[in-house]
Length: 107
Image (tube, rainbow, N blue to C red; front, side, top):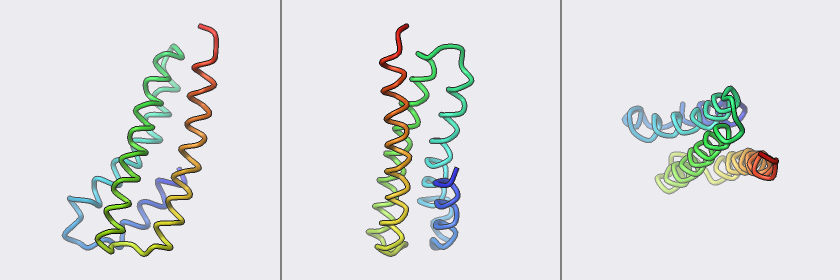
């Protein structure tokens, strides 16, 4: 949730002409991370949950790419990028550990 909140606060300062471009893409990708985790948790099997976790991982990767684009276009400063990338990596690590724990779990 913290990552999504940071993305929304950060993108609030993007150029107005990016509202339906990079701003929207980055916001949707970040929301997709937590949404897929929560949706997957509600499924009836670990196999289904894992499928949603991998989708969340893909959305996290997409978010990183879009943040790198924002940095390259100078929509954000290096310090902002470093801070949010650190949060993204924290989420990624926790997601990785959750995936590993479910994959090792006996069927």
